[in-house]
Image (cartoon, rainbow, N blue to C red; front, side, top):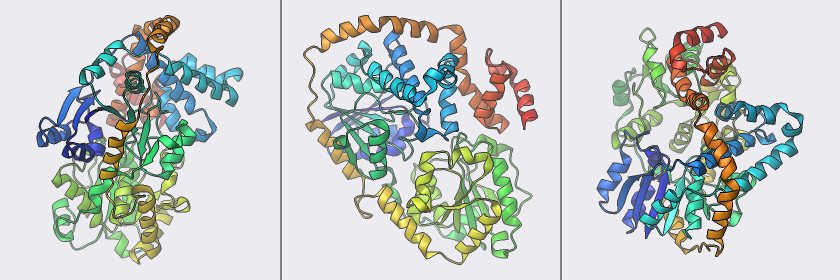
Length: 545
């Protein structure tokens, strides 16, 4: 069987390289088609699996299909995803909403937030439905159909599909127009609640568990018969892993005192935890100020988030005993050595602390207590995101939550004395959320089975599809022309490109990118390249702080 697997960038191989290898091992040919091949490509997982299965795994770049239909599809996709965050379920998710809002045209956001007629819930709900119907009938670029026809796959897979303003819905539509069954593969635990809506009507949705199944049904309108719960295949290796070295040797390598236990702090992304260095410094001071000598003298290991390392280059903890930032350059657990480093960091720790990161799930699998503090400055990344609530004890999770650092220290003291109930909570969560088909059952073969079954689905091509395509092109030409004119205009191109520059500048300045955007916009600095006003923006953000 020939499989075409669309991925946004090589970073998504972190979730699917074992599945791709399993499919190749079963004799299938897989075409990996990356939209942005240079992004998160340093680990070269795509090259490694293609070298392991020459001729079976073929790596390609998805051509750019920029045309009026692409522009219209992208604009409507952004509109749908923005309106999603105006519904009641996302009432408190202001960071998630703002992340989409910065990419929207100001007139559009004002219409649905400040105009009484359009800002009501019935109006927003109706607008979402109208835009979805509109989106489903936007003609797909002819070059995209030709690209798929040239590969001639038996089935098509797409991930992540739900990034805000995603153009991958066109891959789903084009495949189904060609009569090819297509599945959406849900990559991570937060994808259905912290990003955009599923678009294009995939024939099958392959996800982790009943929680995500409920999300797909209630939030995305997916028919339950199209949903398959396979467990989280990207965690399979953690159930078979063993520590690669002793705790003493690990501590020496990481720069910690081998005679003392240590706490592990797992960093989060810049979006989830902006200016995390400031928070961590306060956390270290609280640890060192504990009345309990076991807590106060424990080692502290900080593991930087791989895409958010720059902030730690400016931090110097040499004056604090038994504190280490390791590995200093950050790393994803992909190679055998990096996996061992990550596993050993968790396994040998006394407990794990973090804000909101999927690494908490690995910690639960390995069986180490996980704690967090409801930091006021980071609350938008914790209680105001839906997926964070899945980790809470009252929702069947395992996370020990403290309202402040004083309570957090007390929780650490309890952990030192042992907490059997916490171990049971972690085990129950892992079985329910990660391995719903059984703790001892690997998920990769189940995912591969569901992918193979996709070929049995018959996608009926409408006999009127060609005629309808012509009619839709005539009908959709005016809005497509208008959107293209706006999106290619100098003013909008400058504004739409500012977010990436703001995000990079925020990391450099050690501040919240959303706050930096707000300051920049309020002072009228978005109308020109923000990098040209770097010093002025830095001054403004410092004044606000």
